Amino acid sequence: MKNTFMQRKEDVVRSWYVIDATDLPLGRLATKVADVLRGKHKPTYTPNVDCGDYVIVINASKVVLTGNKLDDKMYYNHSGYPGGLRERTAKVMREQYPVEMIERAVKGMIPHTRLGNKEAKKLFVYAGNEHPHMAQNPKELTIK
Image (cartoon, rainbow, N blue to C red; front, top):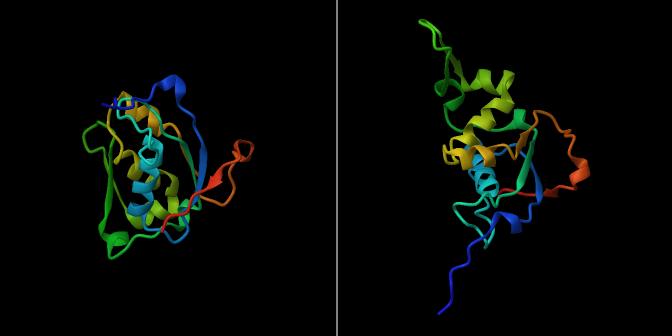
């Protein structure tokens, strides 16, 4: 009988991927990025080990939201003080804070644990076409 393979953190080999978010739906982009960050695209995936890869998302300001989400979807922040609730629509977020919009979508799809926090730190989002990670030789990852 074969034993189940369990990845060790010492044996993890990490790659760098770059994803162009131009004209991609936000949810589909976020699910694919979350899978790569967690390592679920690898046959050696182990749930309790950070075996994911690094992801660079460029052109975050050109991401697409379908339907009426630009006007209906709300993003909330609270300062912790009375009356400290701040609301923004998705349209405002895409225009002024496109990086935060994608980071929130991806972080919501990974576990809210210490391991999930480590996995989330491997995400790099940029509003424009340029990124400072060319030395890592990132591979192009296309999303259909």
